[in-house]
Image 1 (cartoon, rainbow, N blue to C red):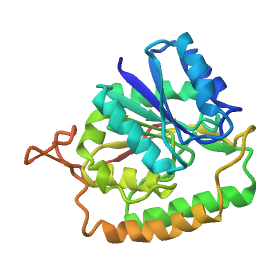
Image 2 (image 1 turned 90 degrees about the horizontal axis):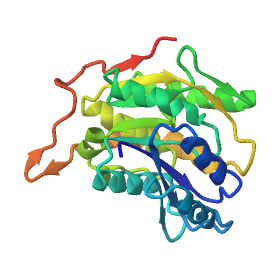
Image 3 (image 1 turned 180 degrees about the horizontal axis):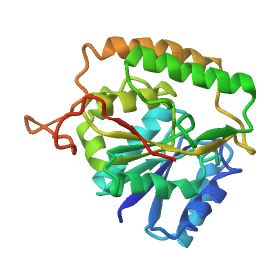
Image 4 (image 1 turned 90 degrees about the vertical axis):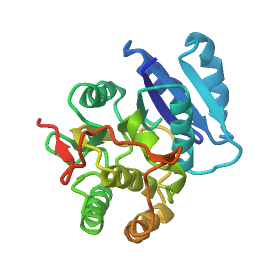
Length: 266
């Protein structure tokens, strides 16, 4: 019991069985936790039907109402910490991220010194498939905008394919994460970076979903633009470090890093 993959779902009945099987077919002892927000299409029921096939490896947490991506992941992070998993992963249910790349993210944290491994579309060796040019331009422009405002050197700050060491999630005060939508991904990286953890970008090929409905909308784009400005402002007043028994939880890095972003070579 070392690696937990957290999958937030809302109306992913077309994909959830396939992604679960794809992860377990890796035969690398990944466990899976699905966080379902009362999907009306029966996503949760499909997961429950699969649980007898993967006893003590496939779990589901059901929440009432559509509560947002960020709160789903935070729910999953707290569940993972409480159950003692050393490595916790984020992945989309729609195969935008190739499950085979989970192993590469794990290796970056387990063997190559990363505290946070980010599946990155925009470093050398990474890329995007089946996205229209305007969507790529929007995504790359948003990444550049985020780097300019936050000063992080992460080239794919909105990436949602990630491996965290447990120490990172134990150190971050998850109750101080402000955003629940896609700006959540930026804020989590920002919090880890501010706390001196080592962030590594691992090149991946991102492929747009072929089944199900995209969750992207104008509200998400607006949140991303305004959220980065708010994030910079909040950072002046927010202490992302969690206090435990009146003592600070310590970073897994030996010393704070000034430029704590690495890029995996191709």
